[in-house]
Every structure is written in structure tokens, then in C-alpha cells.
Image (tube, rainbow over all chains, first blue to last red; front, side, top):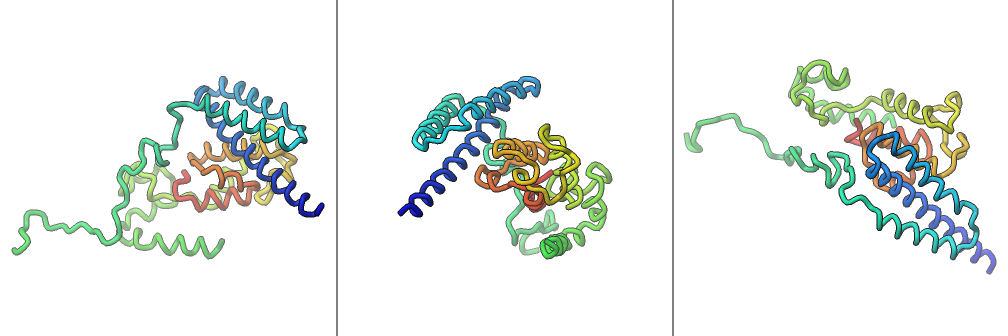
Length: 117
Length: 127
């Protein structure tokens, strides 16, 4: 019985840790969207890090879940409307521009000739 | 690893035969000789050494890391004494260095220099 509950505890902790890592990653990227200059970004990133560090030692699982849910709600509320996207990525300015032609299509260099010449 | 490198080299062969002048620019300096698709990122790919060197320089310049301890096989959290949030920051720095956008779930798995080098080297858009 205790083995099962320990496994459940470990699994739930692992899921929570992953949620926190991904939330921190998204929030950090969003910080860079809001503060486009480095000297602004570093301060904002430190502030963000401190907000994560503040609840580092919380042990109660349900409280951790509530904290994560609150943080995700805050992140969603303050998400940048026009984030930076790497040009080739979906949503980027070069996405699907000048794509590589599909296999089997080739250029035939016989300009000006009719089909039955 | 060696097999993958061999495969990549094999795959490039038809491109080189089509454009004999291009083979020099494939692995050489980026802004050297003009190639067939000037200012295109499709034709050049980073070499393993360059990826390793740049990944290591990013990790070494992370403020909480002692540069002398960084090797190509180092694990961020076990060997360098970082925590998981530092790991996230390093991966984000690597994304900026190589102009990549790594999906969240995959970026979460990158926890050592070895994995980072492998992932970036095999990424077609790494630049």
C-alpha cells in the first residue's frame, strides 16, 4: 500500500516539476517579448526568477498545484499579443516561403517550344 | 553518431554533383564564395566541431558555472551544480545562440551538453 502511494507521490511530484519547468520557460520567453532590450530584460528575468524561488520550499502537494495554476493563469493573462517567432518556425515571417519543391518535380529547359514540336 | 555523420555526407552527394562549384562553400566560411543560393540557409550545415565549440562557450559564459569544469560530456544539474530553472535558462541561451525554436517538451529533455550538441547538430535549421 505504502509502495503504491509512494509511487503516486513521486509521479505527481515529477509532473509538477515538469509543469514548473515549462511554465518558467514560457514565462522567460515572454519576458523577452515584453522587454526587448537586454538591460531591461535582465532585471525582469531576475524578478521572474525570484517569484519562482519564493515558493521553492513548499511541500504540500495540493498547495503546489494551486500555486502552479495561479502562475499559469497570470502567465496567460500577461501573454504578449505579438511574440517574437524564429523566422522559419510556424507563425514566423519566413514560414513556408520558398519551400523545397516536392520530389519528382523537375525543371525542363525548353523555353518557347510547343508540346508537339 | 558516426553512422549518422556518414549518412549525412552520403545524402549531400547529389547536390554536390549538380553544382560542382558549390562543394567548396558547403562546409567553408559562410560568407565566403558566392554559392548558387546566395544568402540561403538551406545549403550549409554546421560541422560537429563548430556546434561543440559554440555550445561549450554558451555554457561557460553562464554566470553560475565555473568555466574550467565544462566539458562536452558534462551534465548540467549533476556535474555543474545547477538547478532545473538554470537548466531552462541555459537551453534558452542555446536557442538564441543557434537561432532555434525548440518545442517545450523537447527542450525539457535537454539536460547535458552531450544531448544539446547532438540535438543542435541534427537540427536542420541550426545556424
